[in-house]
Image (cartoon, rainbow, N blue to C red):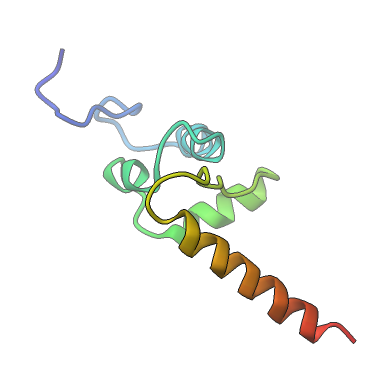
Length: 88
């Protein structure tokens, strides 16, 4: 085990495009979080979104569980109503 409390897939070297793609794929699959990506060197969520798009992937969706489920459902319903109202 290393002294680094947050070991990286780069093992101390500069992150390559392949490393970034691997991490973005793990993020899309829900295997790691945005927080973990920041710890590993991603500074901007826009870079993550661009990487997801480049790889043809989508953002992970948090499971509908926990204390905020009802608030999330209300937010989703509101967005759907607003989008429906904008249709010609």
